Image (cartoon, rainbow over all chains, first blue to last red; front, side):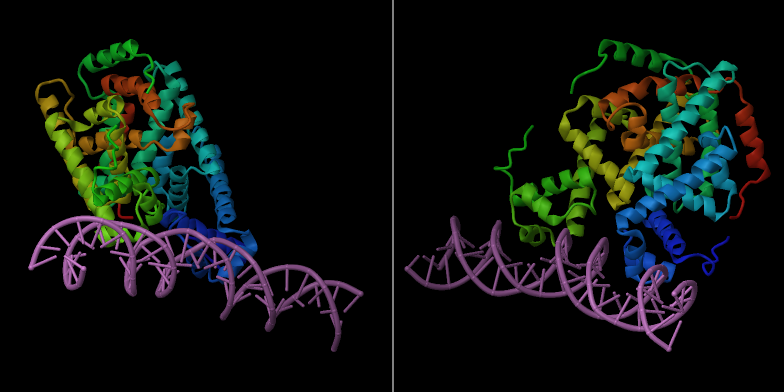
Length: 214
Length: 214
DNA sequence: TAAGCTCCTAAACATGTGTTCAGCATCGTC
DNA sequence: GACGATGCTGAACACATGTTTAGGAGCTTA
């Protein structure tokens, strides 16, 4: 934990405070006075340095994005599987940035789009490699499968409280992740259905109505 | 479409307008003036009938919950698979209610908790039945598997825009659902991995550190 | 017709919050 | 030492938004 605030510039202190607040409460619910208070600074200074709340968010976005992307570059070929590992093993700092980015994805910021594109691309690459070396099953739509895996991963990490409580936990956390690990891998290893009637039914259903205008 | 507003009481008009706004924009971003305008009514009347914005939300929650639950009771044994079918086939009305409830889940309202509990319970029931009759594989943790399937279903329906765009669509919609149907069913039928090394690794990893305090 | 009730509106009120502004302190430079 | 630049503060401003309130319109009832 290097939250030594004394040797950071006020700009950096504000940015870090903003990241923490945005990650925990979301952009809209966070007000500048709270950020300023956490940074130990006056509300006016936030605007003075960043121009507006929106520009501050943009700076935070880029900052977190750069950290996450560069981390992903270190531990190639990362993918979202690593996201879980790091989330489980790493101390608070990384978790905060992941949390922040998940919020950004929900709120659809430009940085989130870049991050998601990276995740999907990495995921697709891993899938193609796995299919090539025989460790993974061929898919009728690798791109869609990549999106699906990323979607499910993101969903797990952003699990809404009601679902966490349905498992008996107060809210999402490492415990929930561990609880879901085995069922998830069982699903990815053996599937769920013992026959392919559902799959066949879907294939014929999709063939009959290729795309329905709605 | 029966949005004949003339023969509805003002209370009902306000409630319906609120449901539409909450579903589209979320609770916080929606302001009472917008609801009042959609309902063709003055802002004061909203408070006059419902007491506060929060109480209005509560009424909407219960209203949508009742509709969705009762619909689920008609077409037993529903589960979330039906959620997709209805979402694809049904006209706007039902889609709106589903949208509303998904928002409520994100924002963790009491009605959402009830709805999620119902979904998970139905899901678990279906899984146990499927396992019993041999159409589904046994699981080491049926409850967790039920939560996992609901989670993935909810995630698909609430797909964040960046992920929809990664598939080449402007935003989530029926087209995305159809595109993901096949990969999803392939996953549920055959799994993804061709061997169980990952599963075994997870089993041993979980055995070694049953629960790590963090 | 008058009283009273219900439904409803328009304006005002209160508060939260992003932003601006005038000025103060500190520090480097001539 | 004067002076200007930089970093910063506290108060004020502007606006959005939930809520309150005084009162009006139309209906029922005596």
